[in-house]
Every structure is written in C-alpha cells, then in structure tokens.
Amino acid sequence: MEIEVLRALAHPVRLGIVRKLAAEPEICACDFTDEFEVSQPTISAHLKVLREAGLVTTRRRGTTICYSLNREPLAALAADLGALSVGEGALT
Image (cartoon, rainbow, N blue to C red; front, side, top):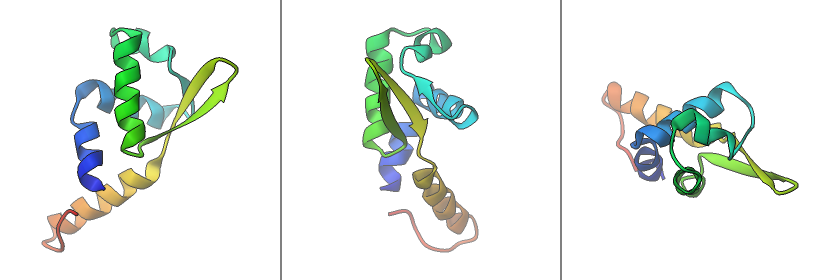
C-alpha cells in the first residue's frame, strides 16, 4: 500500500493538493483549479489518483464534491520511513 501512496505523492500537483488538504479540513474540487493553475479535468484526474491511493475521502454537497485528507496512509508511510531510517524493516 505504501508504494501506491508514494506514487500518488510523486507528482507536484498531487503533493500540493495533499498539503492544502492538510491545512484545511475540507475543500471542494472546483477550488483547486485556481490554486494550481491547471484545468478542472486535470485536477479531477489528480484527485482520482489520490482517492485510489486512499489519501483523500469525498463527500457530496449537492452537485459539489468536497475532499478531505485521510491521514492514516500518511501515518503508515511515516512509520515505515522512520523504521528505514534506523535500519529496521522494509517498505511493503
């Protein structure tokens, strides 16, 4: 699972989305286009990758989809990386 999280975070826009979600509890998809200066379809594609990696959750508000950060995969990745830094274990 950590490999999918690393792949998802490897793109600068996706990493930026995660950073923004870490600072704000919930953001609607349309609000990301101004922040990252990319088209709505591009933002949607990046959000799909983040959702499939388990990094974001969604909630529908009328016709709008709002995103929140799922911190659990990040905590698991941090633990794995911490173990590697002291010579224990390996990424799965």
